[in-house]
Every structure is written in structure tokens, then in C-alpha cells.
Amino acid sequence: MNKVELLYKLQGIDDRIKEVERKLESVSNLKEVGVREEDLFKREEALGEGELKLKELKKRAKDIEFEDDLLLRKEKDYKEQLYSGEIGNPKELEKLQDKLRKVSENKGEVEEKLLELMMEIEEGEGKLSEGEDELNKIREKVKELKREEEFRKDQYKEELEELKRDKEEVKRLLEDGLISKYNDLYRRKSYKAVAKLEDGYCMGCRISLPFNLVREVKEADEMVLCDNCGRMLYYKG
Ligand SMILES: [Zn+2]
Image 1: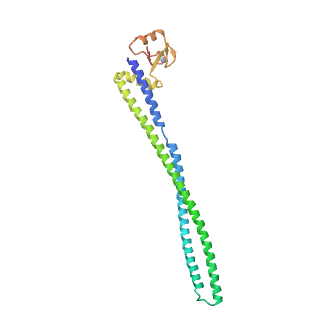
Image 2 (image 1 turned 45 degrees about the vertical axis):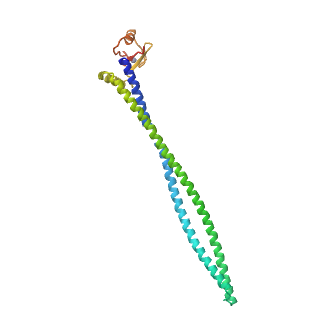
Image 3 (image 1 turned 180 degrees about the horizontal axis):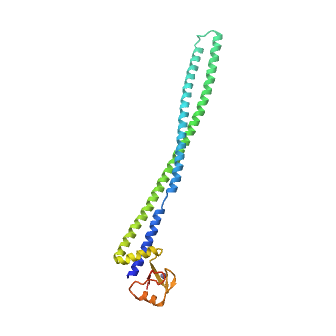
């Protein structure tokens, strides 16, 4: 491989390095992760509120159960008094019967309320568990997105390492002076320091080159620059 060919190869590696570096920079699931994390936050908040409400409902249910228990005891007490045969006075009996009826009515209402509350609690618990499942799914997705991003970054990093090793290998075969000349041109000439010569044209500036110059490129072992753009000319024979 002559020097121009080596420089052409170096340019190919540099191009790929530039491309991979750009890709590495643009690999990001950050936006998608952000959207999902925001959703997660809102859901967590709603779930927290749901839990609080459920706690309140359970406390209310407990209070009502206590009330129900009290009424049950009262009812039992009145019944015992009524059927003990100890009360002979009809007026007192009537009063007791009235009390018993009211307590039983009250108990019925309280139990109905309790039943409604229990149903509400059951529904709330169902929603809460659904919400937890949904949260876990989103958490998994966020993890997956982060993992995938890392994986892709690692791949690009690996490729970069490989390219840099290749570059060093090529550079070892070239003199420092030539490399700095190439680097300077690469920067100044829109990342094209070495241009191919094709059908008498410089592919860097697309100008037809004089016959003498073309022959020089094809035959000379020395570096030949394009008259017009100053790039190093490479002819693949
Ligand atoms: Zn040119």
C-alpha cells in the first residue's frame, strides 16, 4: 500500500469515527424515559390518594361495625327483658316493644350502610391493585429503555475503540509530517483531505485535471495535489 492509499484508508477510518461519535451522542431514550417517569409520578400520586381514601373508608366501616355491635347488644337486651316475663305492666311492655322496634330498625339501617361501605372498599381495593400492576409495568418499561440505551452506547463505544486501534495501525506506517499535513487538510477541506482521481477528474472539487497532472498521479510515487482544490490525489489503479 503506498502512502496515498494509506492516507485514503485513514480518511475512511476518520469518517467512520466521526459518524459513530455523532451516533453515540444522539443515542438517548431520555425523552421517552422522561414522559414515562412523569406518568409514573402522577399515577403514584393518585394511588397514594386512593390508599388514603381506602384507609378512611375502613376506619368508617370499623366505627359502623362498633355501632352495629352496640345495637345488637341492645336488641338482645330488650328481647331478654321482653320474654323474661318479669314485666307485667302493659304500658311498660308496650314501651319496651317500641324500643325494640326502633333499635331493630336502626340496626337494619346501620347494616345496610355497612354493606354499601364494604362494597365501596372492595371496589377501591380492586382499583388499587390494578393501579399497582400498571405502575409496575411502567417501571419495567423505564428500566428496559435505560438498559437498551446503555446497550446501544456500549456497542458504539466498542466500535470506536476498534476504529481507534485501526487508526493507530495505519498511522504507524506513515511519517508524522505527512499525518499532520493530512490532518490539516482534513479539517480545512470539509473532511476530505484525500480525493479520488476518476476519469481525469478530481472527485474533491469535480474539476477536470490537466493530462500531465493525471499522468503524474498515476505514475509518481510522490504525493500529488489537485491544482484546483489542493487535496491529495489518490488513483486506484
Ligand atoms: Zn480538486
